[in-house]
Length: 216
Image (cartoon, rainbow, N blue to C red; front, side, top):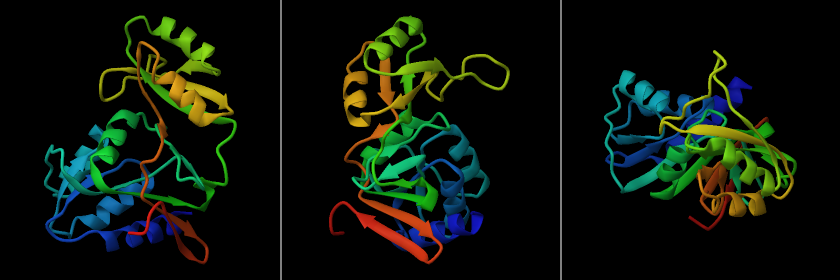
């Protein structure tokens, strides 16, 4: 599967031009993109501390800006409406910000990430630590069983923003759950990315398939 990741990461480079400000996503496929991006004359906006560390090691200059030309990011899963679920690595809020502020948001992944529809999915939800168990009860009322994500030492996983993450399982109506969850007190955001992806590049055995929201 690594060769498919490399193929789609290289395809994404065709969208990058010298002088651009590029949003740098997270995940294994996005990391391959970064390794190939190092020879471009660009500046980057990192979507996570891990991505920031990798970019600096590759000599990619970093900025914090509200103007991003193109963001290239990975995904946990994507469907034919170009709705994504992200947050397996815990960077969902920053990833969503870097996606939102991009003129073009490109998602890269391999064939196993593609689904016709999203159903019975796990949706990460970033919440404030304060009274988080009460927030969990509210998430239950929104329609899903949710468990607190733990780190390798058995302590609550801490996001780059200093928050906790609840993984909400077997979510049948992903859009409806997101719309309920983001209105709950204590919830920062969910890993559901609605109406954000402009282009999805899917690495397949026969090549890279391009799915577009609009004609770009």
